[in-house]
Image (cartoon, rainbow, N blue to C red):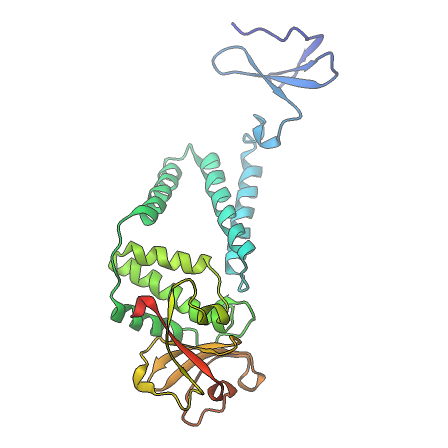
Length: 293
């Protein structure tokens, strides 16, 4: 048996089967009918999301949820990414997942999809992995780098809507690790791809080892004077001051996101044999992704 509060002074019943109470403190409260027995006391000062009628307005909540989905897509697709942007992307994805379950839980397909997503994320995060095939990953990396040819240069950019020099070098490895991990069933590569996406790096940081992800091969006064017999496709060149970086494609060809108006502010392919880029004549540090060794 459910009892009303002793502080009750007046009560009135509205058409929504709620009882509105006014206690001696002057604060209004609501008794919502419970499906099993009696009434449940809730406060009008509670968060809207905790009120019983919040989730009953399915149309409005669905519009809110679709708006969050659209915002998530916009933030994820925005070329310039920062640590705050990555954190916001993850937070929004979690909110969209929880909101989707709350809205569509009665739909069996939605329940299955929501639970399957959790199982997939846990499997990727905790599943067994193995050492990657360096040769296969190197080939995938070079193909991924070439796919960005002609992409507009945007400082801080990391995707096909706009990219900078370090963004190109990292995006190529992120894409290659993800594709190679999925096609070969190597969850360690998938986790590495997510880790690269999460951990930002400038050209200078790439030249300093990027947390053990790159290793020094050699140093040279310029790419024109470099001994190319020591290089492998996928190697990275970083200027000695850390201002710029580019990646080696093989056959004395380099790819870079060049901010120079001379080449149209885009991703281009250059060669020390007759190339006019100023980056070919400055001191460089040559590094190699440890996954490609």
